[in-house]
Image (cartoon, rainbow, N blue to C red; front, side, top):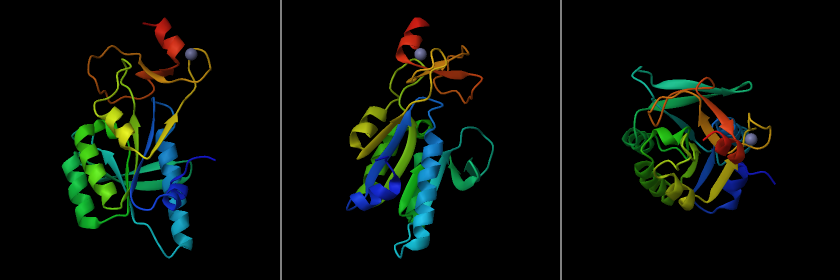
Length: 200
Ligand SMILES: [Zn+2]
């Protein structure tokens, strides 16, 4: 059976952490949004309505507090936040049942993990997307610990642009030395292990 957040809520007694990981272009955000949509539909039929918040990292200096993330025709409003402290303050004030985070690698993951463990221990449901490796195939700091802590780890794979099989690596086309570069399809592509090794 496919992994889903509504199913997991029935499966666990208290809080838990569900991580959607993989390389770029694996469809992680789409999977996150589909899961949140399922909870919204579930809420329409359930007495036990779950209050959801979705956080997105603020990646530049533009001041905005919310942004809409869409997938197919479904749109979900996200709180754009600069750091882990802001997430902690927001959750403490607004008391959501489900805390969703997109692109968690843009936050300080070790610090984020400390908060997420605290929230899950309080009974909150955590769902997030995170890149597992950087462009040099190194795990992002704190991500191995996050995967070890999570109840559910779902690893998604896009198609390798080198051979058409399953990809597992983010390959950087540009030559910037910055570890985290805000980029899209023009800067990165997805490759499998064998095709990635051919290019190094
Ligand atoms: Zn390949």
